[in-house]
Length: 260
Picture (cartoon, helix red, strand yellow):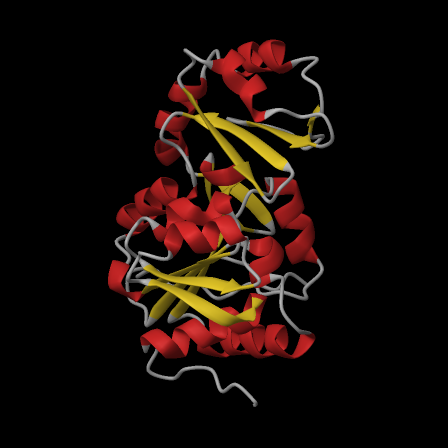
């Protein structure tokens, strides 16, 4: 049975919005903290809303939610910000009007990027299906300076997690796409909590929204967010860090009860 958070017609009417990365964040932490967070989200629905903001592709998200272990989101920012979609009927369904500028920026770049990066030492194209981005894994022998072959293209290069390289349309990433979705839905920005753990989450914290940099986050992300007043550096990893930040910011009238 598909496990979804109930939607209401008045999307902007809510107590809080959790916009969270998946790997290492929403899916991270202990079994106890994950259960506490997931149960709380279900209990607070529909006035507490859930958005996945992830580098994962639509197929992964559909498979994850079909298992029923995690609450399904109402909306998805996927593919490192290049997918903006509703999640309904167990499927990620792109919002065409929000994705149109992303598609225009990427048009003609995919094949050019593939050609220029082909054969670069230590760089391997990921097997996930791509829409408006390309993602690689890197290993021994990779030199970041080799990415200079992309100079002159209207793309951004994002290196994260000590092993990933994402090539994105210029100016497109998780943060800007989340802001576009928030504005489209009329969500209250001061009630939004973003959460993440690697450098590909940095743009979310740069939006000025309340943020949970969860425990165990990438050192580069910790350094980059240290001066951001709304980026809370959590002690607890994964789901535990999200629980910690909800209470630290006083974002919800009925915050989750965390067992010591």
